[in-house]
Image 1 (tube, one colour):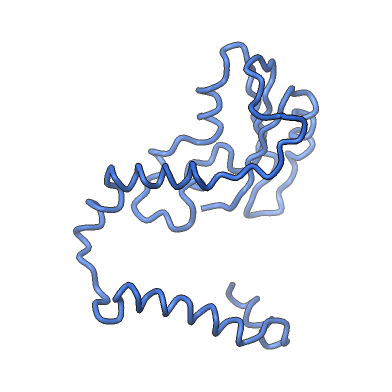
Image 2 (cartoon, one colour; image 1 turned 30 degrees about the vertical axis):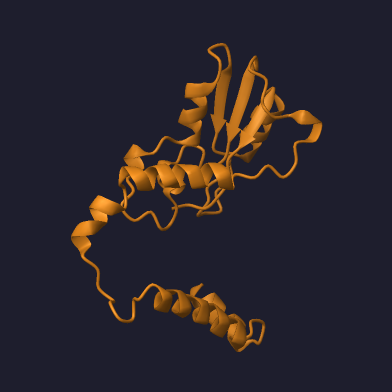
Amino acid sequence: YGPELEALVKDGKVRVTLLDDAVRRILRMKFELGLFEHPYIDESLAGKIVLSEPHLKLACQIARESIVLLKNEKNVLPLDKNLKTLAVIGPIADDQAALLGTWSCEGKASEVVSVLKGIEATVAKNTKVVYYKGCDIDSDKSSGIEEAVAAAKGADAVILVLGESA
């Protein structure tokens, strides 16, 4: 949060007690993990444990179970298998690194299947997939928004992929 948070605290817009509570939760977790008694780890284990087969399976299961559909108005999902055109729109739809998140540890973007590539590999052969980035996440560049909107209007369905950059 950097300087923005410091300014908000100084202006009284964010209470110091709120920060104290957040830090207390972090410290409690570190205490429960034993990091104060044993602060150093055997770094040689990280590569063996982090991307191990059991952990990858567990991560996949957690991801599947954490996906939430808030509303399925007019039973839009599942998508019709016979779509003529599917628009995939969003700045991270074809961004492998963003899918790893900010705490990717040992993950390698080159081993990630982007949302766009996954969709292209899954749709019916007669479905045309069009992709438009629309905008950038980390800049004010939004020159592609109009193209993305036009693509969405011309498609049978749209998958909008939003999120944070890595």
